[in-house]
Image 1 (tube, each protein chain N blue to C red):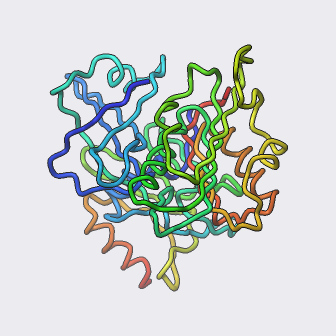
Image 2 (spheres, rainbow over the protein chains, first blue to last red):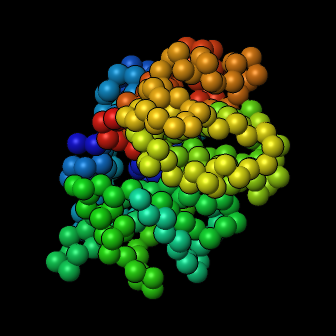
Length: 109
Length: 222
């Protein structure tokens, strides 16, 4: 399977998050490395898109799309900018608006 | 290799280095999506340059079957990481392997159109002379651009002034801006190529945050 980087998932991420995510720096829950999504390792050839940490290869995000619904699993991300405490969670969302509202709720918890 | 100019009525404009995604859907509903670097500068008509991959699902259609007047499903412009604007300045080190030259061409055109005087060094690696794309265009540039070619699978007998070797640490040390000039680097190509170049530049003292990378997969061979 072809190994790309986060730039190759820019369109998919923008569709889900409603903004460019490639410049967003995230912290890996596994090794603590902080890097922009654009630098992460991306495997896009399978049934879903898998984004892995370039430092330790742990899975950061898994995105699957079926019947117009996007399933976004961010278990591997320990921190996103502007979030004081972020606890990861799996979200099934059908729109950007719903995702942002799920994220806000996750941050509040 | 084919350059395709797209007429997108609602195009919001793009920045040099961004991409667009092309989605093809078959009659049975099966669809395949690929991301392509935009080859034109900001303000120019949107263009992509597509390399035909024999085992590809999208590139054979785009390079052979697509005709003027056909419609495509697009998403874009996307990406903000591998992007250069005149205000970002330089000196710029552009390193491209194979079709990794495409977004670098966009950056070079952007520099030309914007009148930027950022000094540029372009190191462009390809298998053979015939594989070098945009060669005539790249040769026509304003002052301040140095072009360095290297071929990895051909040793031309006549009049070749470029290198004939792989890009490695030694070649980077010989051709890249010294780290003391605080250069901004853009590296695009197959994954292995990008890893070698980005690692080499950081070893030469480049700041990791000023080495922007874009990997388009593949196993290299450039």
